Length: 107
Image 1 (tube, rainbow, N blue to C red):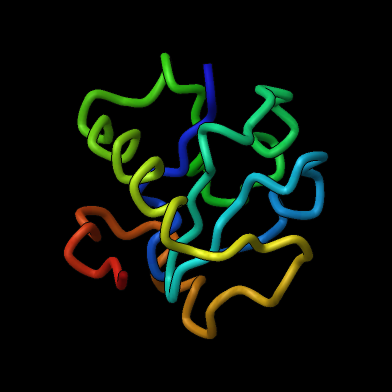
Image 2 (image 1 turned 135 degrees about the vertical axis):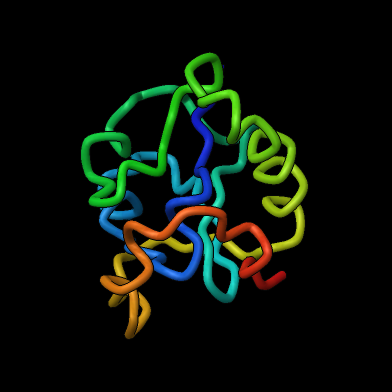
C-alpha cells in the first residue's frame, strides 16, 4: 500500500509532509505535490503533517478522490523530487478549503 496526495493540495502545496518523509518520495509540480508509489514505504508520517488533510492511505482515499491514485503514479514519473520544505504558495490559505479544484492542477 502507498499514500496518495489528493485534491486539497492543489494550489496550496504546503510542504510540511516533505520534511518528515524518510525516503524522499514526494514529487513537486507547479501547484501540487504527489507521492511516488514506488518509493513510498507506508510509514504514515506525512499524513499528520499535512495541514489541509490531503494525504490518505491508498485504501482510504475518499471515493470522490480515487482518480488521484492514478494521477500520483503518473505525475511522479514526470516531476522532480522535493526533499526539503519550502514556503506554501502565496494564496494557499485562500485555496485550502476550496473544493472541486482538479481543473486548477498545473502539469
